[in-house]
Every structure is written in C-alpha cells, then in structure tokens.
Length: 479
Image 1 (tube, rainbow, N blue to C red):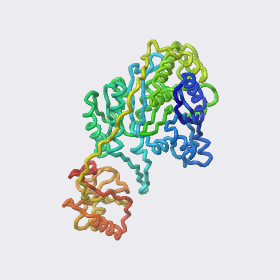
Image 2 (tube, rainbow, N blue to C red):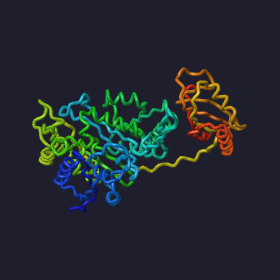
Image 3 (cartoon, one colour):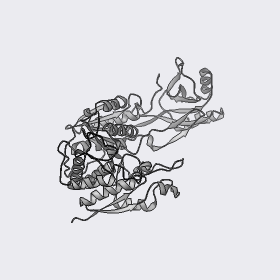
Image 4 (cartoon, helix red, strand yellow):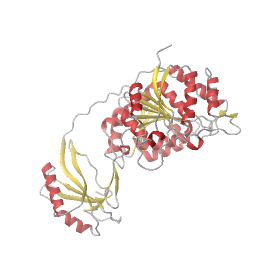
C-alpha cells in the first residue's frame, strides 16, 4: 500500500455534507490512498465573526496538505462578507481555473450532443481585484487589472493542458477591439506563446461573438483561454448547455496549491433530504486524483460514473421519463457508482488517464522597455452646462510643459472637435500633454498645485507613459 496523500476537506453547507459524504465514500471504496484533514468553512465561520469565512487553523491545514477538496458553502445574507473563493484563490496563488464541459447525450438532455471543451480561466486578476471607487454623485469605478506575468502564466498553462490531454486547438477570447491596452496585451501574449506550440491550432475571437458561438455550436471549440470575468461567465454558460450545471466540476490550480470543487451552490432548500446530485463534486475529485497522479483510480471512478448514467440510475435533477431507469437519492447514487467499479460505458466515450509530467510554466521575463512620462490625465468632479467654459477654466491652469490636450467623459471626446449629443456627466477626464513628449514629475506637481489653487475637485490622476515610444494609454472614442 503506497503512502497516503494528505488532503484538506471541507464538507460545506446546505447540500455540501451530503454530496461530500457520497464523494468520500466513492474515493474510499476505490481504495484511493488519501489521508483526510477535515476543516470547517463557510456559514458558521462567517457568523462567528470571521469576515472571510475561513479560520487560521484551516489555513494551517491547507499549507500542510496543499490540496483542498471543497463542498459548496452558504454565505450569510447581508453585507460585509468577503468571497471565500476569491480569498482562497488569491492567498494560495491559484491562477488557473479549469472547467471541463462536455455533454452526456442521450442520457442528459442537451441541444449539443458533441460538446467537449475545456475552459481555462485566469483566476486572480481582472475586475476580481475588487478595487472600486465612487468618484462623483454620478460616477462609480471598478479597476480592471491585467498583468503580463499573470496573462503569460494562464495562456501557457492552456497550451500545456492541451498538449498533455491530446487537445488539438486553443482559442483565446478577449474584447481588444474596445480595451486595446489591457485586452490587447492578453491577445498579443497569446499570439506570442502560440508560436511555441506549432502542434496545436490556435485562434482568437472577440468575446461576445465567441460566447455566442459557444452557445450555438460548442463542438467547434476544444480549449478556451480567457481573462477572469469573461471566463466566469462563459464557464457557467458552457456548463448549462451541456445539460446540467450540477454535473460540472472545477479545478483551481497554482504553483504549489490546488483546490477542487463543484461549480454549483449549496442549495440550502434541498439540504438534508438525500436528493442532491454529487456528480459535480465527484468529477472535481476526479480532477484532484489526476492532479495527484492517481490516474488509475481516477479512470476507474469516472468510467463507473459514466456507466451509472448509461444504466439510467439518476438523481431527481437529471431524471427523465423514457431515458432514466431508476430515480435514486444521493447515497444510493454513490453506491450505484461503487457497484460499477471495473466497468466502462458502452455508448459514452470512456476515459483513460495516463501519467503526465507537470506543465512547464517558466515565464520568459520581457526585456525592459524605455518608459517616458509624456503627460497626465486629471479626473475632476465638475457640473457644467458649457464645455467651452470648462475648457477655458482648465486652460487657466496650463503650464509651459503641460497643455490641455483633450476633454472627455465616459470615454467620449467632448473637446476639441464637434461636441457629441450625449448627456454631460459630472465626471471629466482632462488630458494634459507635453508637445515635446518630455515631462518631469515636477511638471505634474506644478500642474496639480495650480488646479488646487483654482479649487478644482480632482478625484483621480493617471500618469501617461510611452513604452519604447508607443503610448501606454487609450484615447477617447472620437479622438
């Protein structure tokens, strides 16, 4: 008997304890050599005054085992409670969220019987940084942050995943026709890394039409890699169109740590009734076994699960007259899977996990670019009916090296040029630019002092830099 591998397990809330109980029973009967450290997270921990829903002793277990199998949790109603998943992902550096989405036609009803794709979502950055501000009476802001390193890691992970799992194509989704700087960087890095994987087809889609294509014809896709928010939305869409969100498992992978979970919630209304389908958590546990190189056990469990679906042994959520043979509860579904150990599906595609080397994710450090300060964007809170009067007011604060270059609101240019018909906001971006493209930080300070003297309500500033002579900032939409 090999040495047991320690993992941390949280039974969660709502239906969590029931589906975790069934999952652990299946792992035990499959004789997976695991040593389990049980921890408590979620609702009771929140209510005990821990705003993150996770205690110090749980962190100690996670740092020891480095692997977390987590059932769904309930977050108490009301404000002040932080997202437990976001806290865990960021603390443990779980940069990759991996969600296989495939159909199980004809046993699970779906319009897409040939769907079999994997979504690889960046997991730490983007709008999920949670940096937000209210700036004026009208305007609120969320900051979208993408880094070169974070983007490189997730894109390379997607290609490595494709190679190791015999996938033929990696597709990138961005919105770089609008967000040319941030999403443009993600797309550019994708194109650069794709050149290193000549054995794998690559393509790029604008995210809106890309998601529409997934919803309409998902069989066209294989592995999809994308930033955090888009990935969050797409992964739920893709799971749903397979036929059931309840069948989807999820892996969160980092350099040292990993977390595995079902993608559905805790469904407290179904708790304690022996009704819930444990499949999502079980398939997450299969991902965990592959991560731990327990490939034989992972293959045995998933093929037995597929055979159970084929035999029509279904929980209430997927039961359908004429297709299903028997409606069972959570425990009985788990027992049916155990009874089919050693069997493979007859119609569905059986799985066969083989030991693979860990992905090589060494990130090439880009050469340092020449960074030059060329101006500043000053955001002000100002209610005005006349753009011209605001322009004249701003021109009074100009200094020799920083002249007013443009005035815009909500990304739409109001000056110079023809004034748009859009409603005026109280939130203005005033761009001061150096004609010589040589600006010192003292020039910025001098400008700010003049704005202060004129009693202008400056709510935010952003320095404007060129990198190797190329602008590191966007223009207003009509500039």
